Length: 371
Ligand code: ZN
Image (cartoon, rainbow, N blue to C red):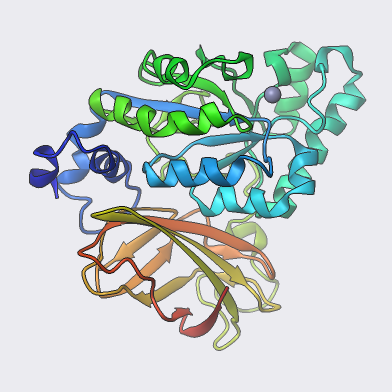
């Protein structure tokens, strides 16, 4: 894919395809020469969207991002996640990172330690319940922080993330002004945007084009540094730097089951599969729900891609081979799926006309229902 895409760089969709391919986490085949991906030679930036989820904008924003091959970090308001749990799940299913932006969006420096702790912990719980993922990043509302707030963040294992560039979307900035703001991002920097404005949604395709023109890619925000880095799997999406909530060592069932092998026939599963396609490519967002009563520890989702579809990059799973009968294997950080919990994975692919989805899925050999 590398030789052909270079001759078509002006096509935004392909440029973003290259962007996503460069950000590929675990793609088995294309991970060789193309991953070096000259396309990310300019570095990584952190796209962030605050104050969601919102019934009026989150779905459109996620569609715009996945269509453009971009991934972003969503700093969610806890009570909005509680009210719109499906939208919180949709963020994860679309390959986005979910983070904490307080429960009610207050001025935290005016609150007591107890109130601040409540704001943060309630949000952690709501996001965990809605998405199965425990946030590791926190952005204080209005960027207002102090030593007390930072201490509470630290106790909860949260890394504080502010921003380098303010898009001013909250202040009435036009779509072109938002695009221009993103154009100022340098390697490692983070831009403040919001889930709540049509201008912000409409800026997504041009932000993708701008980044591609500068050989830059949308990355994840490091829990270690708060800076944008490659989503390379070495610092996974919701990971557990100190107390891994979902890795096998702490969540393996107290049975004699081997940690990486599910009980035979013990799994029942449900798969959601959403395709966003354009003329030559598509993204597929897959949610895998464990509908059994036992935890799954270590999983492989098997499916057959429609003819002509070839995976070029993926997230949250390793895909092999890239066409035909494909196996998607868990990443190091999402191998455990508790009963009733879900994981979100996905990939970008090229196609030759058939943008359909697989007709069946098996998880560790057990047939899944399709949502
Ligand atoms: Zn906010």
